[in-house]
Length: 260
Image (cartoon, rainbow, N blue to C red; front, side):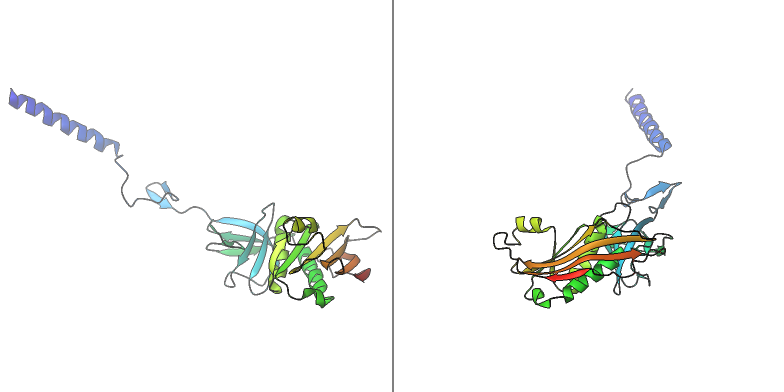
């Protein structure tokens, strides 16, 4: 009888092992496919590449890009990935889908940078030139700076384009960038509201205005200002630029200049 019970136990174990083998599904195998890979027909495949559309803001050896289509980020491409593209060009950047958390951000494993046809607009370059011209005017306002403030909130640049222009400009002149309106910077303690003075900084701003007159091509009118104090500021008033049919903003004219 004991032999019969022993036979039944062994038989049951053999049946259980056969059932497990038939399913082909055991415990996960250590060292199997990473979670970011997909099993297809027994083979692992890497995730598909990603293409992000951006606008070239500057090309000073490496490309600084502003995210397009509502993307608020700015990106920088290393020289090995950068191509000879003019500011204003709309590009598609193909990469492995990973964004490195730097500032500006960087794409991982770039495989292609190609031009997106019909998207050229170099307003960023126009406003960078305006800021540079303001810097060169009344240079006494630029002394002993720690901070460079930039306010482009009253322009038609996107958030990413505003951030990119401000980053390039502050970097060229070695200041720590802060962005915001005069009121915002005063609220944050940078500007002495009571004495109307920014001891260790200067605020650059561009304000677009409603265009008057008739133009055959797209115009923009604006005022631009460099402000250090109530008695230390430099202004470009009633500036005008016109965009050509190919998307270029061909310089600008200044209606008048003022100093306080």
